[in-house]
Image (cartoon, rainbow, N blue to C red; front, top):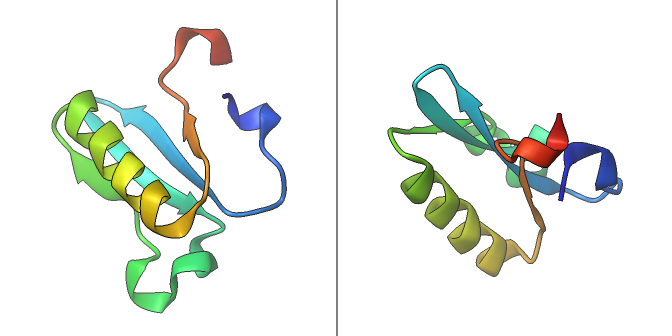
Length: 71
């Protein structure tokens, strides 16, 4: 799923930022004030695993912005 396919409900984004991967909930306010910043991971595997766990807890979909078909 690409960013353009998401609805207005909260979404968990996985994106590449230089050598790191970030997991962020959009809109940030959906998780509360203490958890509004993106989390940083060294590999795509750990970032996707964190997103999957968060998705399992919240029920929100994961959007993989690292996929080649989002360009």
